[in-house]
Image (cartoon, rainbow, N blue to C red):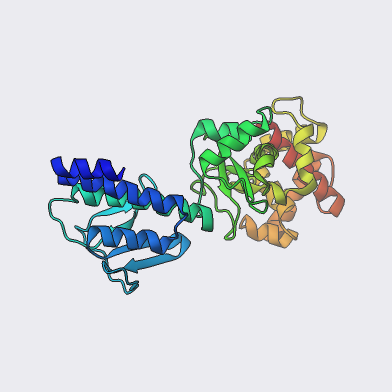
Amino acid sequence: MKELAGRLAAVDPDAGAAVAVIAYFDRLAETRAGLEALVRGAAVLAGCPARLVDEERRVRLRVEPDGRRLDAMGTPGPDWPCAPLLPGGPPALWLERAGADGPSVVDAVILERASAAVRSVLDRTRGRAPGPPSDDPALVETVLDADAPLPARLHAARRLGLDTADPAARFRAVAVAGGPPRVVTDGPPPVPPPRPSAERAGVGPAVAVADLPRSWSAARTALRFTSAGGAPEPGGPPVVRADELGGVALLAELVVPGAEPAPDVRAVQAAAADAPWMLRTLHAVASTASLRAAAADINVHHSTLQDRLTHAEHLLGWSVRTPQGRFRLQLALTMRHLMESQ
């Protein structure tokens, strides 16, 4: 490589210098050089200060062209040559040299080779940057497919950026109504809804990469318990975590969408058809701590709620003012919701 660089330099100085840069960073990579050595190499080769900033992994490093580390940093110049650590990502490596016409050939090669080497070191020593992994649909489907061989799932996971080497790393599958499946890194902070809160999503439990098919199955179950809300039936929240369902999740295995409804579900459906306020009232009674809280929830007087419940109980065939009756009502409303969810 050194001989090739010398021959090219005799014909084209830029080409010779570019080959020398490639050889230099290849040697650093072979010796597993650290971040400071890589940034120092960029600064010395470019003849100007070089800086590396990766806020997500809390890396800030600056080296002068004489090799001295000096981390005092201001705002990068808008015309400084720079490169991201990942394609399409924000700039992370700069050469502190103004260049209205853009980076030279040699500067471009320095940035390309140095950023690739820095990315390799950061991935090896500090893990991949936190945040959601890539969303390639084909790879995500492979990772979540229980029938796919484990080696194939692990290979897809690595391509998505999931850490398969750390036994403590945990991820969650997310099922979004009307959208593709997702895989997100477990907190902290807690996993946020993957889409705007108005959309429905079920979030599976935090598991290792190899167990993501199980998390995906639980996420799809959790999705069935979600609701977009709104009148006349508020239903459940738009985002439901499988972890929080507990034994209620077993109902999803017993209630098949479109199947013949149970007698209590038929009773709720008949009552709902009798009055426009019925479903909202029943949901308030089933989901609040007391009848007074239920009245406040639907903004009616306590006596009005009592009158409504007398009428509802006549249609349902059981009292909803006792703990047993409210539990029966909760089950009936949940089964009705599961029958209509997909």
